[in-house]
Image (spheres, rainbow over the protein chains, first blue to last red):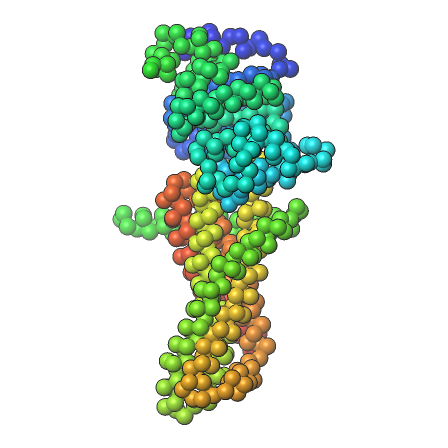
Length: 260
Length: 260
């Protein structure tokens, strides 16, 4: 615990203007199961922050609280300076246009084609582009970004797991979000496809300058993509630092994550 | 002792479910009058539901008409009242058997379909993906489906009634050499607005109940594929029960108006 605290010192001194996302003292329980016990986190502009934790450690619960899919028991969540726990539904929906979310299972709408999947978020957020939405060109551009322009008229059931993940990423990108949340972006994919997705995530980050919060238990993914890491253990940010710093830690709980 | 406790738990959970369903219905009324309105999706759902159930309603209606006439004929012949057949079949089909059988068929076909579809969308995080993209999934998925079932069921009932009467006519034509004109003249002479209007109003409530329970069960589906199956199944069981309750209330209310 002490090591984790020591490593995290530098986050306290970061420029407040650079913070796009901040969680303070987040608590969430399901009955007697206390999943989050005062979790804290900050994400800076243009940063790739990886959160690692064991299965059931509360990573997905935390990320769902972040976008308002779940209500936290206690604590504050600030996204681009707005506390989402106090926002009304309409303001939250507008804010959500700036937050992309890549779901673990891609979550493509299986009754719609790839084109319709990408058009769907644009229906609600045309005001973000001053009402001038050229849907067709935006869909094609988003698909070209993920190298899947030829799949535009296919149904999700006709796509492989990796293709689905790419299309989901394209759907996330179409609203040009400032923050992208990735929930286990490489889970369920073979190592080659997983690597392709990681490269794609890096390219997107470079091209659009987005801030990324990546939830994973894939150490390789964390090594390649992270600027900074948080280890979520027992519902708190147990340790924080760069991959290089954490991977040489002598703390047994931290070491367990980096064993191959 | 244990069984009393378990019975109490079951009663508690039944009333909790009734409460949740009422809240869900309240949310439906609130959301259904708020713009934006999803007309395109509503038309898709109307087409899909009508199209999906039409053949089944026609087959069931036809068989009901045949069976009802075949079963009743010998008894009426015994009393020398076989000429009453068109009136008796007409009133019983239009007032009670047509709406009820069509509603039960649609509960199995449409209600379970909605339960399974929304349940699977919930489990695969598609509903969460809609919410995160700033689209109101309740309005897009639930409101459109409930409005579609409410609008389509009376139409299906009318078609079912017509086919059932035609089935009955075929039996009469074969066994009693009754002409098409004579048969349907007798049917329409015996029917009054007091038979048709309450049955049509009742059909709207049946349609609403099918959509409401199917959406409720699917929208709050518990995790896992087993949850999807359970949602579809309980949607049919709960709707069927509710249809009988609505039918009883409708008959009771109609009876009061008749007395007046």
